[in-house]
Image 1 (cartoon, rainbow, N blue to C red):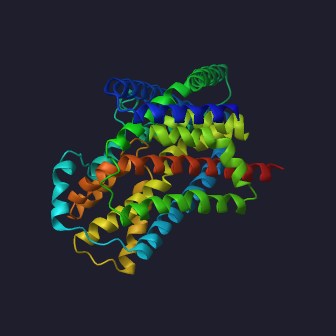
Image 2 (image 1 turned 45 degrees about the vertical axis):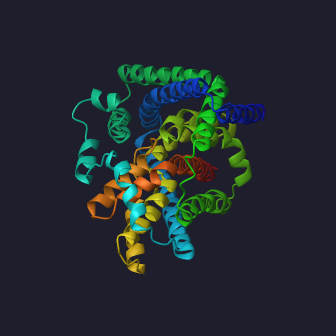
Image 3 (image 1 turned 90 degrees about the horizontal axis):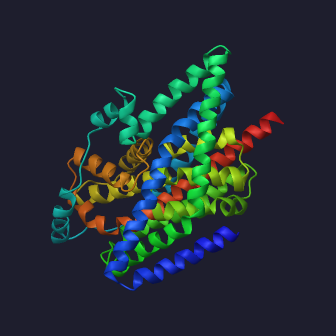
Length: 399
């Protein structure tokens, strides 16, 4: 509770500093926020790799298979739910088309955004050396390597050599979590910087160019998923949503400001273990996987934005079209990089591939900072729910 109060106080202080509009102060806050984001990204990569390897090595591939099965099931269920909520809101609120002159204003902005084909995206997941995925922070490649090493260790016969390797990895993981706790202890300073950075952007007019109903659909869908759909999943498994959210609030707040579920992963894991009471072997296996494949907010953004862009391009949004794009949005969201603007660039790639008017994404760009914040917080909250439900299920089975 003390930590939450301290973080809220830092949030208020940062907002006040950001609204002041002092150039040197904004530059300083940008620097501090960047430092914290880089430090958490630094810790996120080894956290993912060590968590998966040690879980397979110590828990066994059979036991890990049960955990992974439930993780994947809950991930797909919650992601489909998020996409369906977005589709229902889109049909209900029915955003209109933009004037042609407004669309043309987005051309210059979107021209700067890179797009990657699905062929390149899939190929980039297959590592061609051990070092490159670590240097690039390629989470999917790292997961493939971690799965291979972890399963290999679990299949090795018991020996002194295996014991030394596993103990060494567990020792590195303990050291990593000590560094994470130190960084979390200093986090109020980072929250001041993140909050000041956001307040400066808002006061400079980042949200002034909203697209009304479209923004309402995107943010409304996120709010419904966050406060209604995910709590219903928890209730269905016999868990108290208020308790789970209260315990996981530090991770959700961290996600809100970093706009990166991967950078938030160290905090999410520490919070799940220390505050929510999830078993280590569950938290350290489920959460790194969820960070990679469980993207509720991204699925909803891809669906709503794709429908909006296609509608402005003259595509008739029939029921079969909407159902198809619900499936496309879920499949696309799974494996999307948990980094700032990951969903934006993925949607841009999809729309470029079908020849839709991608200039509209240039109009969305100025307000994407706010959307990205809300989406990331929802993603981490969903990760927390999947982790809590998986832990609950396996406790029930073992009792």
